[in-house]
Image 1 (tube, helix red, strand yellow):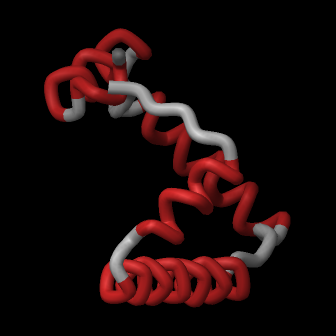
Image 2 (spheres, helix red, strand yellow):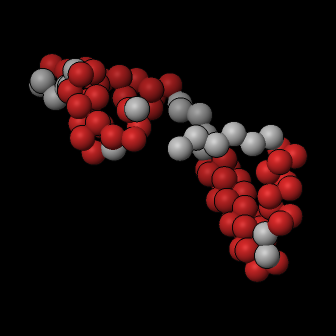
Length: 86
């Protein structure tokens, strides 16, 4: 099922929720913001040394045959998470 709401319609729906449900939603949104901000703080750019190390690991994996084709990965995702491939 797909649902499309404008921001105004969504706000209207939120305002119609019972107070307890609005409180729950507010807490969920607050928690999400807190987690998102912490994640942003934790992210830092790779150094050149880290990038070169990743490239070397990838080359070693390719040489050792530790790779999958796009189709293999797609089949794995479809079997595990079919809703992602609709």
